[in-house]
Length: 343
Image (cartoon, rainbow, N blue to C red; front, side, top):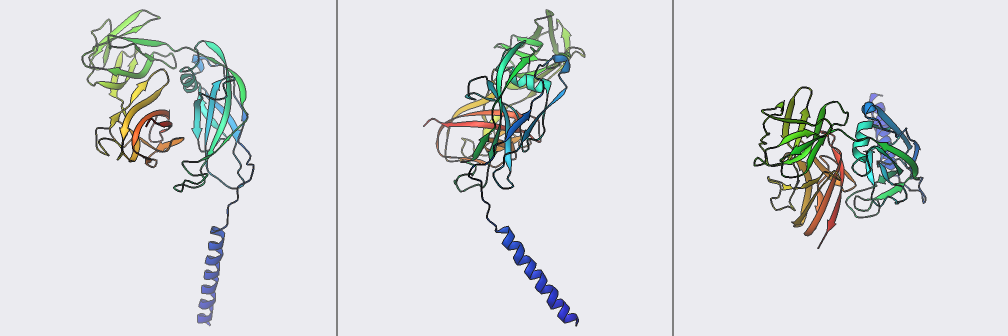
């Protein structure tokens, strides 16, 4: 009797496995006209510095291709009437039902393209990038994605200007800004140990210098240790400062140094907040990383770069590559890039 029960249970197990395999092999059918995402709720976009830490929420509905699908969503803005010829990304993520960002973050992104202390007419849209498969080159793959855009929403955005400290003597016109107007300033600056610099508050007319991380009113010029791009943080209330290396580079088998350091340095554009490089590459793969290390790195597809994402394959040629970092903080850094093959 026990033997018969064992045989019966074994048969049930095999039947369940076969049924499971049949379900796993079911075809996924995409709608001929998938439902695009929609941007349903937009918060008040009149920004004030005193509300810089307030969190604003945009609400959307996801794309519906006719089956359960994964998508990356981009909340984008452009000057009204320009048909998103030159959009700026306000938010990116894997869902769109609740898209949150602080006032200071949004103001900091938009002020790179639109005037401060003024109102601008913008168009907003929600863009969904749907990747069905990868590695085949077929429609829906990483190199040939399905993209769906919501209807545009016309809005008026009022931005506030940021208090700033100007770098004097650094060899180029540079500034760092305080997103909250609280006496704490930060920014990426290009430094050289040969160019000692001081800091000037153009509103108050106060000059700062210092050494060893200690700031002083009318102090001696600060001598940087590292050449190249650095992050400079200043607190004029505590009279402190710190300078840390911040270099985005290109690395990979397609680059001159392969996967070894040093990486190929990219150049930062403070006006657009982007990193770029023009370089000869051989056939191979690339990624982006910070300070020649793997703690912070971006890979994936040009539209969707994520922490530890896959290597990006390229054929041999001369390229101009422009990187936009949409989420600078690790370990969840994210971004997108434009890769142009010049020849």
